[in-house]
Length: 62
Image 1 (cartoon, helix red, strand yellow):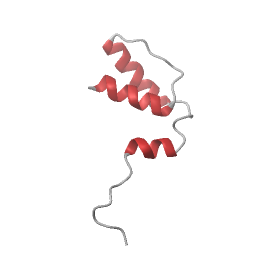
Image 2 (cartoon, rainbow, N blue to C red):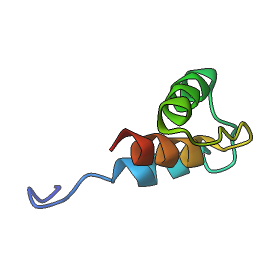
Image 3 (cartoon, one colour):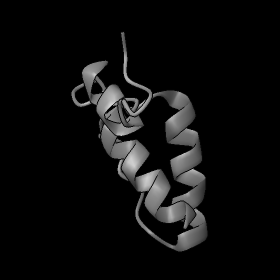
């Protein structure tokens, strides 16, 4: 039986388990990141992994 105090796996950890640490970012991530980079006047890097793209999207969305 699982304790009610048991916490779910953090989304970041789940993403790493799914191979996103080595898989290239998706086209959806690239589109969103490209738009955020343009709006923030930052350089878009197209060779990010899915995990790196998620982190950059989160950073630029704040």
